[in-house]
Length: 84
Image 1: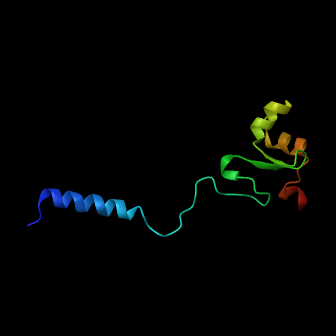
Image 2: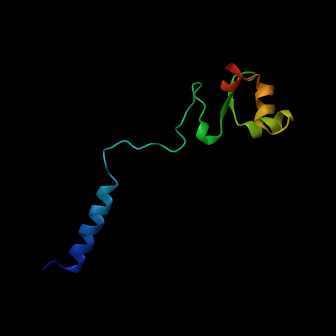
């Protein structure tokens, strides 16, 4: 019969080893657009500044309305819908 301490040790070892899998995992915040902006962290490309910007931060800094329309207008971005 297996003792309680041995069973507890084996259980902890199994749980620990389950977290050491070799498969790759997606990293939170790793989604990037074509310019390398981390979109999952709120960054979008701004053609005017030639940088990845967070629209709400840029709106506050440059004193324009906090909206995507105002961000695109300020950055002189052409959205996919405007291209069609």
